[in-house]
Image 1 (spheres, rainbow, N blue to C red):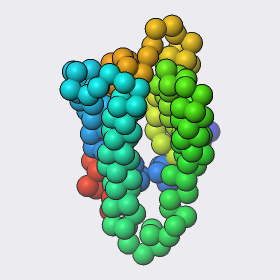
Image 2 (cartoon, one colour):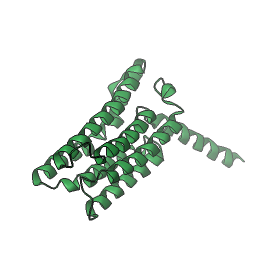
Image 3 (cartoon, one colour):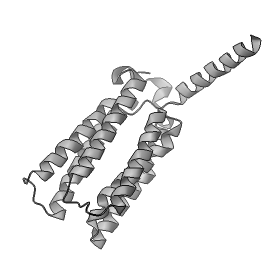
Length: 201
């Protein structure tokens, strides 16, 4: 019984340490909004209201990206400035900084592919880079988030290699991001309990 009690205490300590490592700055609601935005954006881009040209379609996706970034990083800023005392230390944002390199790579690939006229590879490149941005959070976000990142990366690889996927066909991009961000949003909401309480931890 003593050995079992010791093992149980070790497991409890591990759970406590893991709980303290978890990053609470990302908003489940913002991710749900981003997923809905991707689906709505794909519907608008496919409706004929936006010219079926690479430039117009790319501009539409960049607008969707800008709105999603505003929602997610706005929620991150709200979380950060809502924290009190030492919790407002910039070190609290360290996990968020780990995602910047893959996202910056996505930006560079966008410019390079546009210059090369290979805009049909953009969806796959964006998705693969976004998947990579999930991987640094293996220890600081719920494990399901890591699996979601692998899923995004696999979808990105498939889009890069699949024939017939074009920038002028917005539905694959919109549907995959809608499903992925919806899953990611519910994962965060479940982990945090709700966004309001998580901003004041």
